[in-house]
Length: 194
Image 1 (tube, helix red, strand yellow):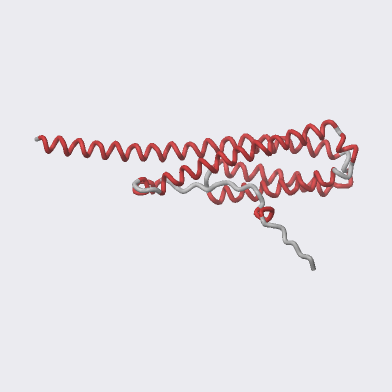
Image 2 (cartoon, rainbow, N blue to C red):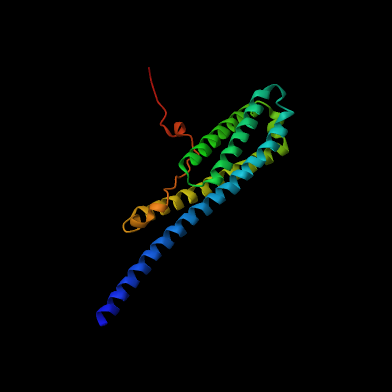
């Protein structure tokens, strides 16, 4: 009788232990999804600023229509990439699509700001300066939100891969981090004295 009670207690402890592991995986998964929601907020803010930026620049950059159209097209692709990622946060393909579209948008905005340097009136325009400042602030917020998301993804992936959680984690797909930076920009510049 005492042996049977001890056996029931051991089984109950094991069950509670595995329930705790499962709940920890669910909590970690919800954590990275919440962290992605913060990225969504900041990227949506960024996407919402861009039409105002383009409208402000349009009057000054009439013959730079190609640059303005490139920014608008890149914004549309980024909005679509964000929608796909929002539907499946952590999915590798969705994160790659979002990363690619955001990199294209960053490059298009870089070209817009480079072109605007040649127009002193545009550079001095109060609306343009305010939008540029807001965009810079938003870029910083995106970077912080992306870091929090990537940390949450790492925590989740670590939890699902360690033993004994790996025994019950088969229903928990791996999450992918988000890298918005262009890998080409991370390469060291090549210096040649020939």
